[in-house]
Structure formats: structure tokens, C-alpha cells
Length: 345
Ligand SMILES: O=C(COP(=O)(O)O)[C@@H](O)[C@H](O)[C@H](O)[C@H](O)COP(=O)(O)O
Ligand SMILES: [Mn+2]
Ligand SMILES: [Mn+2]
Image (cartoon, rainbow, N blue to C red; front, side, top):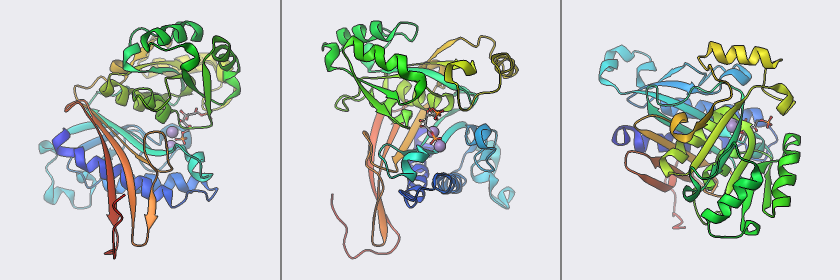
């Protein structure tokens, strides 16, 4: 899969990032999102693959593009039957978040990215648009920390695994009222908390890279972003666990249906019989081959944001592959016109 679409998916996230970055700081999150979706879809539909969106712009906003179930790839082009034989093409499932951190882009803040994950058909968990309790940590803590344990216990385990004191640990938590108790507990245990307003995919993946000064992600974010994070963590060997949150009382606001009972019924309809199940990275991204790609829209912990210059733009992306066991940082100059000079760095 790597060799067929590896390079192309870099362009998919790059194009989405460039489109969205033009709306950076304009205070218009819908447009920042919409242009990323359009650009991602346009580039994706030129790839020789039979793709299906399994996590997309779906349920939350009834989006007309990159919706769950949409088929993408070269066969969707007009007159495709003249030049494309679907039987010859690889069938893949795709999870996308063309603009992860729409608020961050709209308000010119750090940490937004265009992101996607790919696996062969059936290789990604079809997460409903629910919340998910998440725990991410570096590879050395994999299967030692546990989402069923308290934050205090996990911080002790993490400090042992990382051979550092709890005071030297930094935990990212989304700045939400639902996390008041969690934040207090982490601080009381001695660790330091980095609060983020949005963008928990970046935070989860950052745990797998030393040097980011992010050692864990704890708390509740969205489930689709959980699957995308899990895909990267599965390839990187980092720790990731997720548990769906179906009780509106836990999160109080947001994406969730009107009652716990109706949410459980909806999960059952989707074939999720145990709503309390804890999924690990390998279960959320179970494909034999998993690919992850992201491109910074605004600057972040892992990637730089899009930088425009006269006649072009420069992007910074990350492509992670389970097949080749690689995490590639890709620095690309996009030339619209022939520039008079190109900056080396
Ligand atoms: O920050 C986020 C928003 O994503 P997007 O809508 O693509 O810009 C995600 O990283 C979070 O995982 C998540 O969507 C969020 O926590 C759920 O919403 P909220 O009710 O505001 O916490
Ligand atoms: Mn998102
Ligand atoms: Mn988004």
C-alpha cells in the first residue's frame, strides 16, 4: 500500500493544509474547514485506489463532502469507466479530519493540522460521532499504564517507565469543565498540566516522540479523532486506549444524543454490543497495513504550519507507515509560479 499511495497521501494532507491556512486568523472556522475538505477530496479523487470514507465529516454537521460512506479515488471521476477498472484497484478504508482544530485555525492559534489515516478495507474502527475517553503515553509505558486506573496510579507507572519523577511529567488535557476533577488530580499527584483548547490528535501522537515535552494525554475528546490518533500510535508503538462515552451526563454538552439509553441503542445498531469496552490502538486500527499522514496548518509540537511566500507555499508534514516502520517528516515547497529564488530553510 505504501508504494502505491504513500507519496500521494502526503499531497492530500498538504493541499488541505494549504487551503485551510489561507483562512488562518480570519475568525471563520466554517470556511477554514470547508476549503480543507474540498482540497482534500479533490486531491484524493485523483489517486488510483478504491477508497471509502469510514470516518469523515459525517454525522456532526451533515456535510456534503467526505461524508461517512463516500467513495473516493480515481473511479469517482467523470467518465471513469473509460479509463479505470475498479477490480484492478486496491480497496481501502480512510479516516479523515481535513481540518483538525478548526477553532485553532480561525483564531490563529497553534496545533491545527490536516490529517488522515488509511488501512485496508475493515482495518479501521468505525467510530460513531461520540466522545471517547483517551489515554496516550510513550512506548515505554505501553500496556503498563491503563485507562481503568486512576490518573494518580498512571502517573506513578509513567514515572517508573520513564525513569523520571512525577514532577517532571507533562500531561495534556483538553480545557473543558468535564475535566475539572481530572486536572486537580493530576496536579495533586505532582505532575504538570498543559491545557489545550482543541487538537487532541496532535497531543496524543506527541506522546510517542521524545523531545516534545508531552508525556501523556488524558481525558475525553471526540471518538473519530481517537481512531485517527490510534492509527498513528499503532504504527509508532505508543500506548493508546479509548473508551466510548455514551452518557450525556459525563460530558454535559456537545455531540452526544439525548439520553444514555438512546445512545446505547445506537451503538448496538452499529454492532457495538459492549458500550463500555476499552479499545487499544491495535483494535482501533487493526489493519495489516496502516498509514497515517498529517500536515501542519498552524505551527504545532510536531510540525510547522504552512508558510506562504510570493508564488508558493512551504508545508511540513508527517507520514507514518506500519508497512515500512517509518515516520517521515516531509518538508515541501509548493511552487505556483516559478519563483526567483527558493529559501533553503
Ligand atoms: O479539538 C478538536 C476539534 O476538532 P475539529 O472539530 O475537527 O476542529 C478535537 O481535537 C477534539 O477531539 C474533539 O473534537 C473535541 O474534544 C470534542 O468537542 P468538545 O465538546 O468541544 O470537547
Ligand atoms: Mn477534529
Ligand atoms: Mn475537523
